Image (tube, rainbow, N blue to C red; front, top):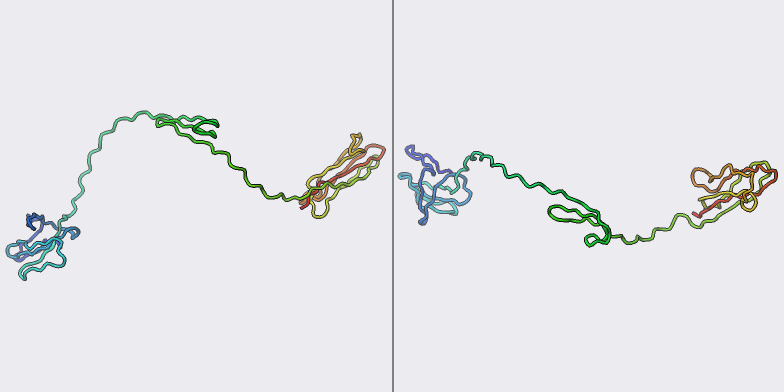
Amino acid sequence: MNISEKLRGGAALTAVALASVTVSGTAVALASGSLSGTSYQGCLQRSSHAIYRVQVNHQGRLRCPAHERPIVWNQRGPQGIPGPQGATGATGPKGDPGVSVTSKQLGAGGTACPTGGSSFTSASGTTYACNGATGAPGAQGPAGTFGKVTVRTISNTISGYSEVSDEASCLPGEVAVGGGESLGAGNGSGQGGLAVQTSRPDPVSGTPTAWYAILENSNASSVPYEVYVVCAAT
């Protein structure tokens, strides 16, 4: 409790106005405020306003004679108001100019970076950023989607001064992955008057299963031809 209280005869008692009391030979200042920290209890004589029987951190309520009043106070005074802001300090001296960082590429085989990298030099020294070492070979990948590859052909003869279309087909369970044709004796001997008008997979969209060709013979005599398709098992 705050020990400012109204006494008989209109006298006011304020703890701050009291000078001190002696507890076991030690002077103890009296102050009002919260009850945190060290607390004191004593008996107040109503007639003389004297405080005696002072106890430090007494457990429980101090018993005083019936004609006296028990009081409680502590050492902590009320918080003071903030002081004025201090003056602005003087400007410090100008710092030294900074030093730029220079970089350099490093080849493989050096002491700092055996696998190559870069060096960076500044006022504080040289640091390095090195390339990583070559990694170990990866595991073997899974088998490809195609199985056995087979070339299938169709052979025929084109008459003189004529044009023919034909195709070589894969077997069921196979897809066409390439193809072509030969025109003339000896698998395309270079004879003149022969031309390939079209050479493409069939069908042209989706999954091809054959090779289609249109061939032209401008000679008077007939010539042999061959269309082939490269098939892969799925």
